[in-house]
Image 1 (cartoon, one colour):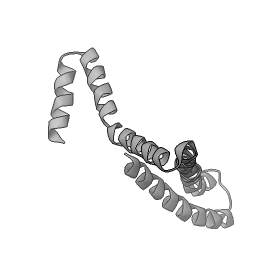
Image 2: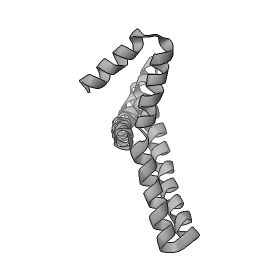
Image 3: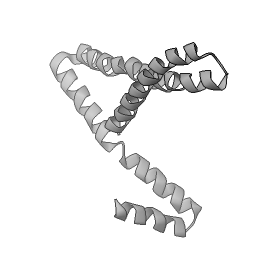
Image 4: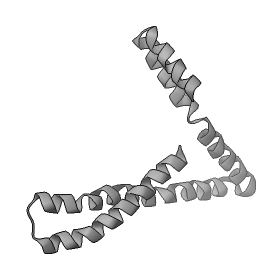
Length: 120
């Protein structure tokens, strides 16, 4: 990790263009494993069930998007509900309700962060 940071710092010394190019190269490096994983999944699914296998594999990969989006959207929204209610000057009873949402929001926000770390 230290070597990588040193390489980024070195690319900054020679100018903005080399810094941008180096950043793009690092970004492309980060997707090598997922691309190979998808390629292997396509090959195996085609070997087992031809085009139907590819369709089922694609559907399986796409089916997780809804869950990920719901977690990413619900977490921060409900996590901020208590703060919004407090800043709006709402009654204490509303704040009690938003405390439960706040707890759920903290949990889903943490799950979303772990999910993003797992993907990368």
